[in-house]
Length: 220
Image (cartoon, rainbow, N blue to C red; front, side, top):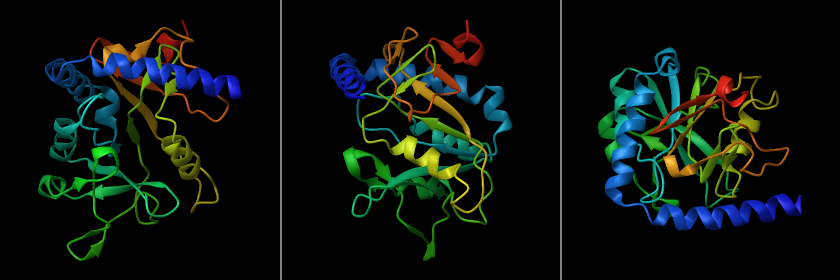
């Protein structure tokens, strides 16, 4: 395990250098291509309830247009919120409209987050009994490879969330949502280059500016 963790740390360090070298215009251009690929995909059309991250100021795919288009398409959108004052858990809370989205202020790492309430009422959470099954999670990361492995930032937010969401002890067994990674081309490595541990969830799909990698391609 120590070896895997040291490998992950080394890869995060080398990826940070690469991502810092990308110009804002390059990231925007790639983000536009990735947004188009997601919106035109079959898995997007089939999904009704979608979670999408709100991006950090630098170093990852910009989702600002994508989240607005999810709402415009009539889908139900959830975005992450970290309980930084409590147990560090990540929840997904509902976004009600584009105007709601525009009110979010920056939280941890400069990432915009929703308030717990909306218009005086508790904001819906994906764990609420009244909330329908989450169909898809659009996932960020530091690096991915063509075998669909993911390297996160090391905090374990997504792995812990998926475990909790699909666990029978959290309000009933839910199906695992489709896990779709959004990646700049520089974040996509050859198969086997992302070190993984037993608890790491593998992606179902990776969408980059160069194309879509799914399970069929990963099995080749």
